[in-house]
Length: 381
Ligand SMILES: NC(=O)c1ccc[n+]([C@@H]2O[C@H](COP(=O)([O-])OP(=O)(O)OC[C@H]3O[C@@H](n4cnc5c(N)ncnc54)[C@H](O)[C@@H]3O)[C@@H](O)[C@H]2O)c1
Image (cartoon, rainbow, N blue to C red; front, side, top):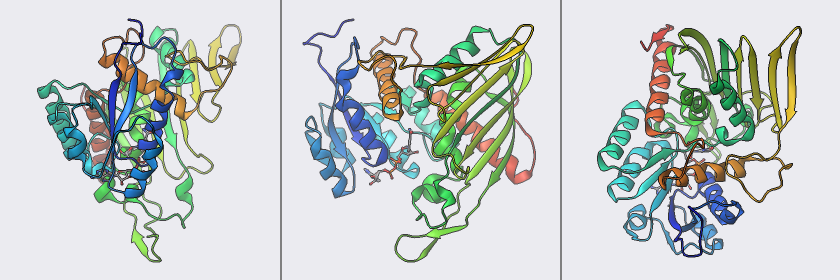
């Protein structure tokens, strides 16, 4: 399918124009950077309850509707797909409104505040036949793709262990004011796992490596934070989570460690994955965004370092030697979403599915139980 001047664009609406809503606007603002991509798209409508954010979106020339009321956006007949980036306690009600308005949805993680909400959203999407995927952009990095392809190829031999994580550090500053992500009633009891977990779980789950058991170590580190108004507020979410899991991989029960941390000294936004096998291994971290490490053994054993260029899954005009970053992979994720929705994904990597989001919630739910009971929770597969 080739892009022609007559191909009508998919019309996008955004509910929640905060950090991620604006990043998404930027991805569509340079949609033309995608080469030979068959689906044009444009951002046409934005909803946020904060007037100053609606004002910000006036700089996007394609936006025709700005509203504080999400039902007004959903009533717009020229909106085909809605991206929702709101606090977690609002996911279920707004996602269900989107689906019932007959729109397709790119949902933000964690896809509902808890496991029960995630299941209700997934089931309603299936009942209504809407196309729904869940945001997780890091697997679209060239280095992440290379790790995924190596793992899928079988070249690693017997898998010995898997480690994946996503690490932040700005919460180490006790003077950082509280926000909704640090309060369970808005973020969810799962805390940091809801914030960072989908990013960590997406690639292993896509390889079919869903945990059969979970032992979790969860930490709450600062119990209070400045409330931003001169006072103090309770900070009651889990800050750091390390999940020691086992996954069944080719008949072996393999240790798989998943770490999600808001307080990892020195790590501003480090996404990493390492998969070690008996024959080969692969390691990638956004700490070294161009670098893929691969292990091989012959007479000697080698960790080899490859400089990757701009080998994103969907081709763009960007020079092959340049480095990809967050805005690039966010656009790649959107390209995967619209390609899959349009039936032209081919063998490209697809966005996280509602079933994968529910499976991730099963893990986070087991982690809460494991931490509470200081036990290993068997997920029995
Ligand atoms: N994919 C990623 O890399 C990534 C990164 C950060 C956050 N997120 C996810 O994105 C979502 C939003 O996070 P954020 O960091 O953008 O938060 P944010 O606080 O920056 O933005 C949320 C926005 O939602 C708006 N909002 C609240 N209630 C609303 C309502 N009823 N109608 C319309 N708008 C409303 C707020 O005014 C705010 O502007 C969360 O689910 C979060 O987990 C994803």
